[in-house]
Image 1 (tube, rainbow, N blue to C red):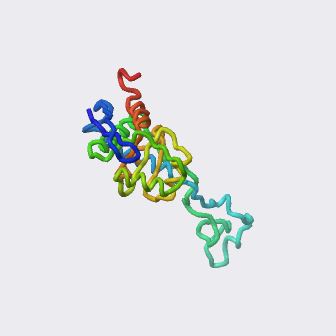
Image 2 (image 1 turned 180 degrees about the vertical axis):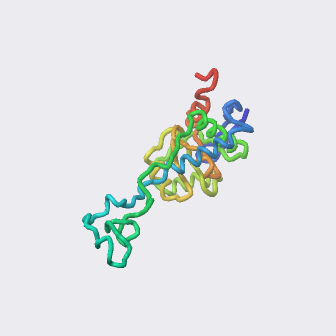
Image 3 (image 1 turned 120 degrees about the vertical axis):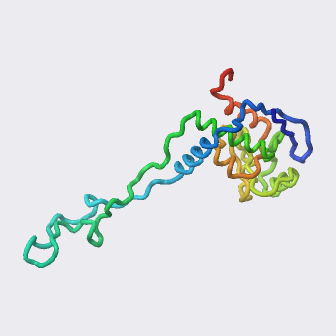
Length: 214
């Protein structure tokens, strides 16, 4: 069992929450984490690079010159890839780079990534995130109260408008819902601040598919 301290927005310690070790993947899942990160980064690629093949290059089908007797190499069309302004030989075409990640592999990767965060002491639990005014100064004060420095990922049950507006001007802060947080995001940020409710939602994701899970 892993016990995490719960803090309020002033940095005062309230109580603690327990995360079952059965939800974490200790000693396994390293390859799953690698596959999940590679897959997510591949899915982010636009895949829109495109070049013209010889059927798409504009121009007539007229033979540039007669086949024999000119002393020059034979040529059949001006759209040839060997000509300037012609088609691209084996050029890029629109495609999808991301591959399929098995559901169990993705869940194992998430369990391992979150477990490593807990083991390193890089997870802090916030009782609730209530930003009354969409001001950067308010959110910066919250980070100071929690003693958080450097890049930090806030995991919440729902991204509220005031909170999103208050943190968007801080380049080292990102915010995501517990239902959408990815393995790459957990690995990218040195510190993760998660609300109590969001932690429950994340535990539901980690326990999904396990024997005896509701």
